[in-house]
Amino acid sequence: MLKNLFLLLLSTPLALNANDTKPVLTPVQEHVTMQCGTEPPFRNEFWNNHREGIYVCIISGEPLFSSKDKFDSGTGWPSFFKPITPASIEEKKDASHGMERVEARSVKGNSHLGHVFPDGPAPTGLRYCINSASLRFIPLENLEKEGYGKYKYLFTPDPKP
Image 1 (cartoon, one colour):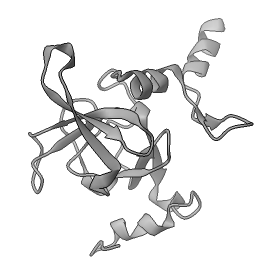
Image 2 (tube, rainbow, N blue to C red; image 1 turned 90 degrees about the horizontal axis):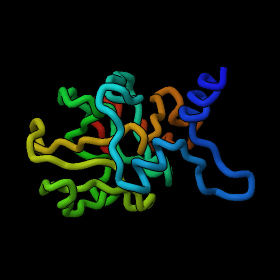
Image 3 (cartoon, rainbow, N blue to C red; image 1 turned 90 degrees about the vertical axis):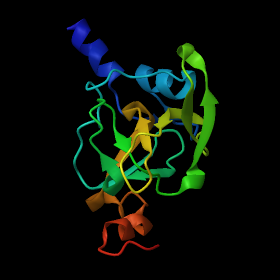
Image 4 (tube, rainbow, N blue to C red; image 1 turned 135 degrees about the vertical axis):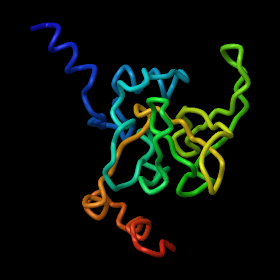
């Protein structure tokens, strides 16, 4: 019983503190976003999500990626070939773990999202390999209700803002 309670607490969704606008994060979300951690591949919330909608920063709520730009990279993490707005993602050199990589960070959330690799599909050739724990998914049918109605254009035949 305690084990089930512990597992429930680890997976508790994002909430806000009663006296603050700072999100309350699960331990995995905290590790990924604030400590530049990585969640396990194929065992995360969005790697295999095929619903239409947008992915927003778990910290700031800033819209980051559209499901229209998501693809199966075979890595076990959600992968996108471009952000909704390039200025919402900061790219920083990352030489940790003995590798040369490019870290992807949320500008408004000042948080770690994942990494960008030059092996993605056309039209950009980029792969934004993003931790599910750094994201919140807003389904297309909830965009208006959640305050993201202006992003419905992404799901029209000729998506222009």
